[in-house]
Image (cartoon, rainbow, N blue to C red):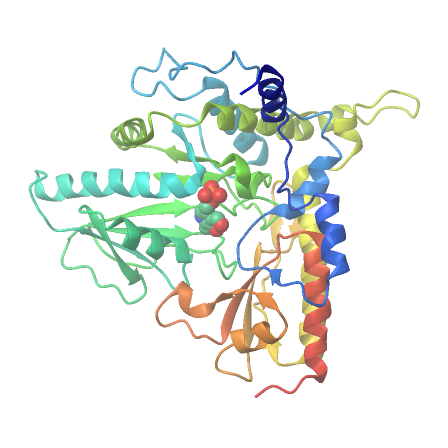
Amino acid sequence: MEAKELLLHEVKQNDVTIINDKNNDTTNDLNSANDDNHLINLEKGDPTMFCSYWKKLDNECSVTIKASELISYTINHKEADFFGQMPEFVEAVKRVHRVVGNAVTEGRYVIGGTGSSQLFLVALRALASSVRKTTNGSNSSNKRIPVVCAEPYYSFYKEAMEQEKSELYEWQGDANTFKPESNNPYIEVVTSPNNPDGRSRKPVVKGEGGVVMYDLAYYWPQYTPITSPADYDVMLFTLSKTTGHAGSRMGWAIVKDQEIAKKMKKQIWLTIIGSCQEGQFRATKILQFVADRYEHASYYKPPNNMYVPKLFQIEGVFDYGHRILAQRWEKLRAIVQRIGVLSLPDFSPGFCNFFQKPTSSVPAFAWVECKTVEDAEQITKKLKIKTRIGSRFGSSVSERFIRVSMMGDDHDFNLFLERLSSLATMELS
Ligand SMILES: Cc1ncc(COP(=O)(O)O)c(C=O)c1O
């Protein structure tokens, strides 16, 4: 390569632009030009509704990582068993939970991972190997530990486990029909609020040898009233559903037992040599920002002419999330009621300790039942709306159900409502 070409090449390499941002204005303009043909993708729980919130705070909440920074594999030399964990990240996680009051973290181990998706499998492995040991006294049994979750369950659990084909545990489906043999070990996954139907949940299997893992991805005040701090042995959370930053791929597990925590850290170290430091760095900044906003907001009710930092001029992210979701649910319910052929779950309001008032559950997904046809996708395909079909959430879940993401951007959500309204005049059979 000639020197000039090389220089140009380098300049291009350095000029990193984000070309695939779903909320980028250009993308939306292009979408609106082709609205009638645009396939609305509400199949994934992509939390892009948070983009317009964060856009207002770009100058207040951003991270810069210099080329010379975060070079080493190791960060935390004090914690000999997990070199890849930033102490600031652990502190930020604990602080945000303290501020929100949705989980007990004192005296618990916080383990960061590549989204809670990675931690789900890491925690299963740790739990499965420990229950095998406890029940058999040794690790010699070849029996795989059954893993169950009540239907309808988050489709990822089954699909990830079947893909992984672990020698330690195996997916056994619906917890409601699972009968553990005598006091044999099993793992029950409890997702609360649940994906796909938004219900609060408790374990359903009654067995002696079971352990429970809680996926609390949606136990945040924007989705559901926070009634008490969750205090379970293994709890999973994720930045993607807390603040909307799914692309950072940061999740965390809060673990009571030291041995389980050790196993999880070892697994992460041996498989990916520690969690991504850039991800932890960004998550730390965002979580601290959120905690600051809520912890110090009350100091900033100053007289008119006093300077108020931008952080306190706009609503907090949980208020924003709850407000947007509540508006969307209200609009969706009104349309569903008008067209008659669909139904939605109802939720009773509860007192939210975080907002200090009663709030309604406004889940991240709508679990929609179609009352007139056997296959709800028949309808959504006609409307060019991509959703996730009920059978993905359990073998006995009817295909009359579909899961629709409520967390997408405004453009797609409004188009979705518009197309749904047209059902009132469409013939369905
Ligand atoms: C219940 C539940 N748990 C975990 C996850 C995964 O989150 P992450 O983005 O951290 O992988 C999701 C994502 O949709 C989810 O719905």
